[in-house]
Image 1 (cartoon, helix red, strand yellow):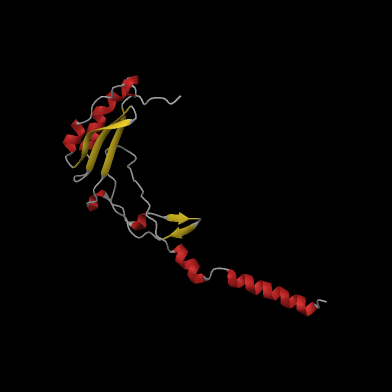
Image 2 (tube, helix red, strand yellow):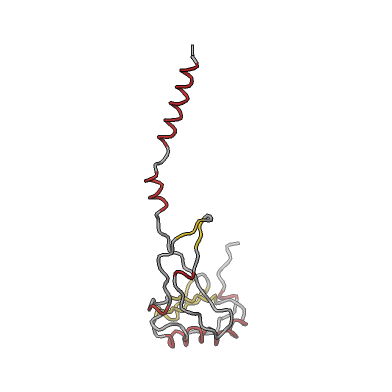
Length: 158
């Protein structure tokens, strides 16, 4: 028969066993020490206004309400090349052709050293008009008006 003391001892034994089965502070610290890279794009509110140089102290990052440490901030001025792949759907409406000049100007304004590829999605395949290149003018001139025909559309499985 169970006495009051043996029941109390049994409860303490279960409590101690549960407490020992929980991960210790060292294990919890290792899990929370993982570093994750997050990209934040900053744009000016008005066209033609230059974005000021920003430092890590200009940002605040919170995860689950807790402030996180920001290790570094990089800008295109740091010489980090931009890799841009433009994939244009070939069967889109012909009105897209009206925006080609703006897209060419965008490519020409990219930071020097940027790599640009231009491709068109046609009938389930990709036509690469310009493989990755650092020649921004060449990438800009490789843009063409989309075909805008159903023949360019991918075949329907239905």
